[in-house]
Image (tube, rainbow, N blue to C red):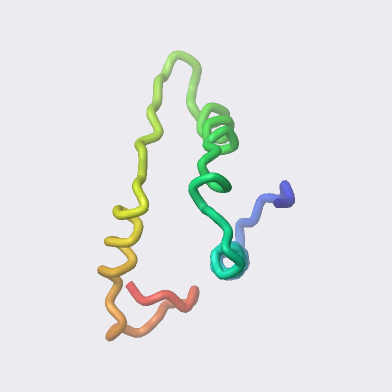
Length: 87
């Protein structure tokens, strides 16, 4: 993962697509996401850098079932946006 910041929405969508395609390939090759993507340290550092001194925050646990339910709830009958994902 490179350390650049992307502001262009089309570029963000492209990078997210590439990220998720890599996950698909990883799973197809027999990889285990539970052991590979359970490290929240980068997310913790990012959020901590955005929180003002004296404020507190909590990153909620997001389960695989939660994500799957959200994905299953995406309508396939609607037109896609500029990011090629239906809403």
